[in-house]
Length: 330
Ligand SMILES: NC(=O)c1ccc[n+]([C@@H]2O[C@H](COP(=O)([O-])OP(=O)(O)OC[C@H]3O[C@@H](n4cnc5c(N)ncnc54)[C@H](O)[C@@H]3O)[C@@H](O)[C@H]2O)c1
Image 1 (cartoon, rainbow, N blue to C red):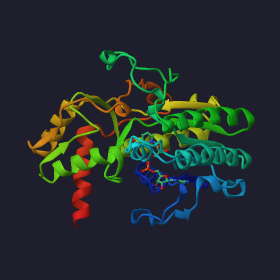
Image 2: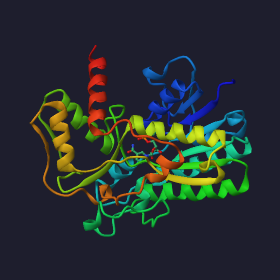
Image 3: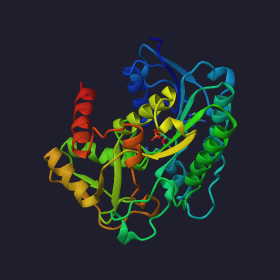
Image 4: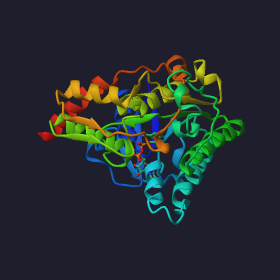
């Protein structure tokens, strides 16, 4: 059988690197694109690397692919850094031009190239803050909303969902969006989720590990390990490109990422202590900053309709991170 072909944007990112690896394991041919050079782990057979901006992709470039997986974006942490000064409003144009105009270009070019399926990253941040903090954990918000984004980043991702609906109406291309919840892994140690992964890495190395602002002991996370998150994107691409299942009958759909894990920071700290055998692991007192406070999302649709599974709950993720650190030490 002819190998399936995928074009992946944002391939050097935390999730992108694992998406490329997992597509290769499933025997897809992969064109991996980013605005930076190929990370060493991705210089392997079956992966063609391109330095290419999402804003510049053409229909000719995307012709012949079975799926485009669009992950390239400027993220929440980029926006937050600019807010640090608290005085001047940040210039949001770089983020908006990548996340909105870049995404519009990827979607329009994919439709023109008659790519059967586009899978793209939205974000759990489209929901905004929980309406009632005390209900966190009791009532999961549905995939259909309500949405009350509180950052321009989240607004940009909600716009991506709207553009997917629009282009699905105008073309034969099927669009599947995924809203990652808090995704963590050792592949990127910058930004908010990078801080969390770095904290676990410190705990694994037996060092004193303190997780502070923007986290706090009063917070809760709905979290997913990067390998599971990447597998969600691959499952969506397989589902969308085959077009032979219930999810594929809908031309444009958005799924919350498939995780069963909603843990308080005290529970997370205890799992990290137990799995690393390190009692010098702490989370600072206080609540999360507002941008990290999110409602609990219903995640059953991705399990039921895309066939996703969760292989790495936190304890298994820590075991996997231990192995990765040991490999890197050699
Ligand atoms: N990690 C999370 O917790 C999380 C949560 C919600 C949503 N997401 C979304 O999932 C996707 C992947 O997230 P990630 O954590 O891997 O992010 P990341 O920041 O690690 O990776 C994003 C990649 O996009 C690339 N990029 C930047 N500008 C680009 C452009 N103009 N054209 C093409 N690529 C460009 C960056 O170089 C980077 O490698 C993003 O769209 C992000 O918004 C991630």
